[in-house]
Length: 118
Image 1 (cartoon, rainbow, N blue to C red):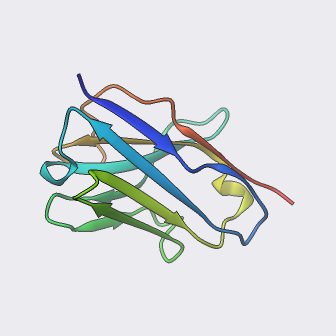
Image 2: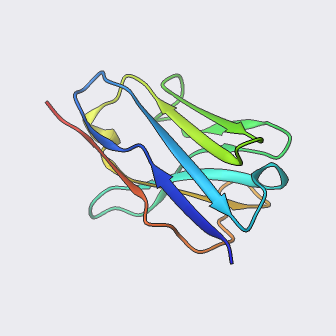
């Protein structure tokens, strides 16, 4: 059974930074595309960033230049470094994996809450 555990969220002021982590059991991240998503209250879940098995990176326009996705194969963990955070980044962040950017193949974890507020 594939499970994802997201962590690293919290409350931060605008302009601040957070690093999210996604650990998985049941799959090897380096064999899949790993996607970070977010869902704000009252909105649909949206793709934020993705890293392919070969290391190709993709970002939503709203986070380009501020967020960086990376992967540690030894730890089977994917990270999302978020800098210059804005109030509109407030959401629950989730990770998932699949064979195509943006398509989640597995069940969802509990997510991690990111709140950006002064």
